[in-house]
Image 1 (tube, helix red, strand yellow):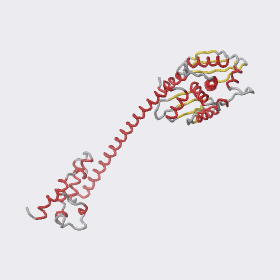
Image 2: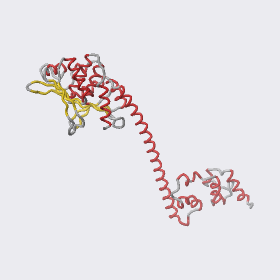
Image 3: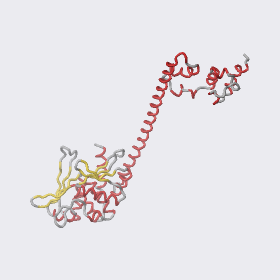
Image 4: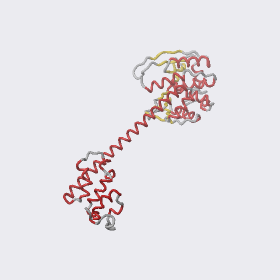
Length: 339
């Protein structure tokens, strides 16, 4: 089963088992389910209400609310999976008293005209009723994806008016939701992970929120680790590319200078020409030992010719750094003239 379908099924199963005691809250949930999962139909010159639901548990819940709240008898039939339908659906139909039920639930106005959005009494009700509206909309036509970059809580709406009404009710609960239209289908989407958790808590899916948050934390830790590994690999690649480019430049410079290259430049460029594939940190001048530094100072012609510290010229480049104590001991025979 797809992860998206699995999460959606878990949420709907938990929401279908929520026990509601207030009659107004039950009526708000039922009216929203009828609005988002079905519609009005004319059968034998009579107005009938049909609602297509995903699970048998939800179908039993709807039939129970219809009988207890409005005293209406309903019929249920099974729609087998075929084509785009991956699973079987359950069709709840009300024939007798359908017009009266449509007016009571807000599907029709006083002039027998269909209401395109949600009734005003639902959108302006208490927070419990608004949470019931979202619970009914999700039970009717909602979906939840696994946490990650594309985590979203979506509700497919029958029209733009219903989508805007759902966005307004989410704002009253303190959750930011957006309405969008894709290929003529209107949807209300919640993208933020924290907002999804808050909305699930309002709807009554507490256990699913805990599982979803745990999965979300694991995904975030894994994504952070993968991102750090990718950064390290990118840094290593950049270092290797820079080392290759430096070696190429050194080789080209030595080819241009040829036999006229100074001895200290030849000594510094030999590692890049002899062993171009060594690690860049080990071939750079910053990792040379004090012995190599002293040998370079002894073999440098201007430094050796002018006699160390006292004989250096003011413009000599080696004035920038004083020789180390070990280098002075090595240079002492050259300065004093003793063997």
